[in-house]
Length: 351
Image (tube, rainbow, N blue to C red; front, top):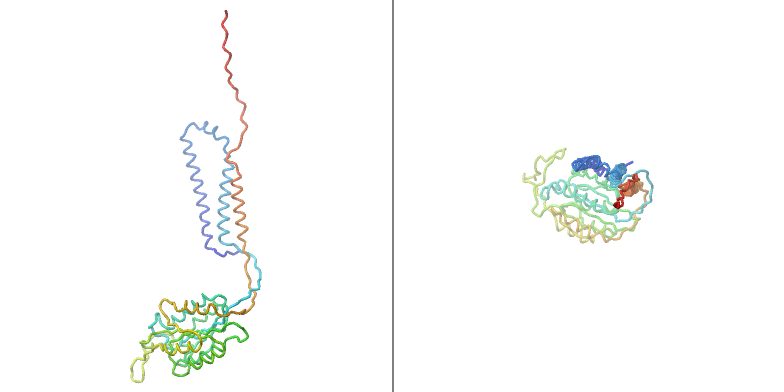
């Protein structure tokens, strides 16, 4: 047997505490009665009290409390297999893992903030399939489209600049790679979310966005960084920051967010551009945008579900309470017939 909410079982500690309280209250009542008068007189007055019934009533109350706590914990045993039809969108996220995404003008840094937003996005999707493509100087699909969000999140731990050895940022190639990952057989809307700082001097991301739009892909962009920018960190093989990148003249390399390019990509792709904020409000805006898009049946799958058994414990608790209330508090006892004093007739005088 397992429980849906095993933490609720800690409330079973209330049962022995309740039993101790009842025992203490009974002793207090006995002491109070002892102070009222003669014990033999009190015994005669309480002859009709159903003492055994009161003990049974207390036991049934405690049993009902125990059963009620177990039912709240949702006991389960046995399982059943159900066919689940899943409907939703196809959502691909293209995540920039280039060295510039380690800049800390967005806290804790651009890449860490983007990964947090992907995690929040997965938690708020309801049945939509999601996949992740990584890119810097090259691009590849790290997580194919899936509704298994936990597995997808586990792969996000490896989303670091070191996973792609080639330096640079190829947003255009990333858009093409993510577009190929969609399932063309499904009628659902294909949504691509590009998370990057927008710096790209190697490809034409706007042209790639137009190609994707022609294939029915809706593109949204989220920009991470600031127009002023900050120096790009230099890291060792373990990912530890050891300094800052410098150009040929020895000056620090400054990474600035290219907001204009991201706006053009979103415009051509039929979506919208959002700037990443500390509060993460852009994610809510994105979800509002895609919430009303066309959904389709993604797949039918077999789901194994444990059978709930709380109803049994709840019914037993109810029966225990009903039984406790049916126990009489007093028992009618046959008392011996007592002599009735009849006043004798007033004697007549002897005349």
